[in-house]
Length: 88
Image (cartoon, rainbow, N blue to C red; front, side, top):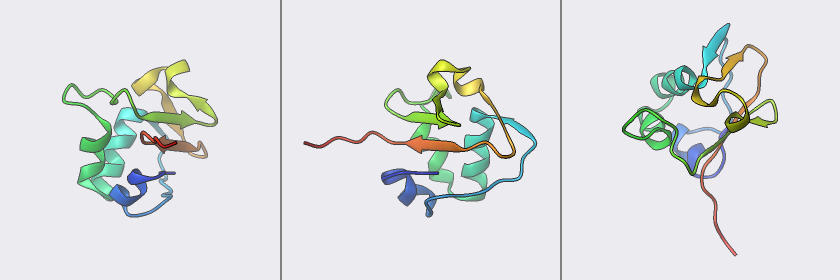
């Protein structure tokens, strides 16, 4: 699932991929390849790491508390991408 500006980048709010086992980094590349080349540039910095202001949640847990960009996801897992949101 993609929220706010990322929904616009990908062109949809949700996608379903049939992938046995993949890291978050590989998933970002796959989404970029299949739906929007801009997605990878938007989420990853020049070093290939997730930009610090993006939050990625796998099955309700932040990847910051898992294995970061190397967190493994499998079929049936729910991955949510949150861009920076501000307001008042």
